[in-house]
Image 1: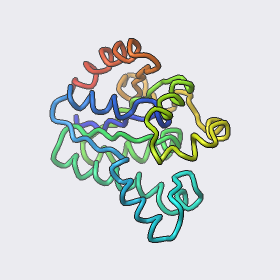
Image 2: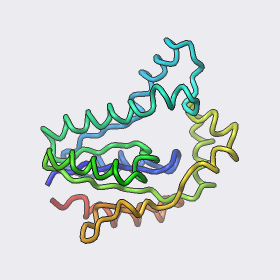
Image 3: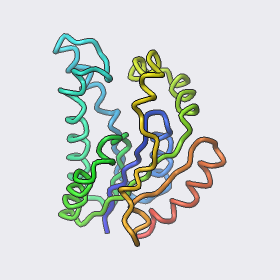
Length: 195
């Protein structure tokens, strides 16, 4: 069966590192990264005469959901030709919305595909250190308002995604240390390689 793998978590938990590592280890994977859409989003801010702020009301109203819609449309198109598509994106709200996930699973069924979600479990202090180290303009507001930002971030495992008798429905990847990450990778890779 075809698969759409979502690598999800709050920002700076290690989605990109894991996603690229998985795509190197898995066979014939289409890799999609929502961050690839950022140049287009920056242009929307510019044309609208708004400051670039991915935490703003403007971003929420005019860009955020369209980025997710676009990356999923690209994934659906890729599933016509490939067996496995991996999306590297937070999906922080969407994965906790049961109706959204049910609709996504139904749509994937039309492509003969199933949803596999990898949730990255990372200590918030580790995320902050990684965010500081990467020093990305997309994190500027978060870093400047860390206490306010972190109060609104849900690091809880999204158990609503788990389907009995389908271990791939929710895979946990522990990533607060390299040893935990390596052990998690060794555990989940064989599961994702199964048909």
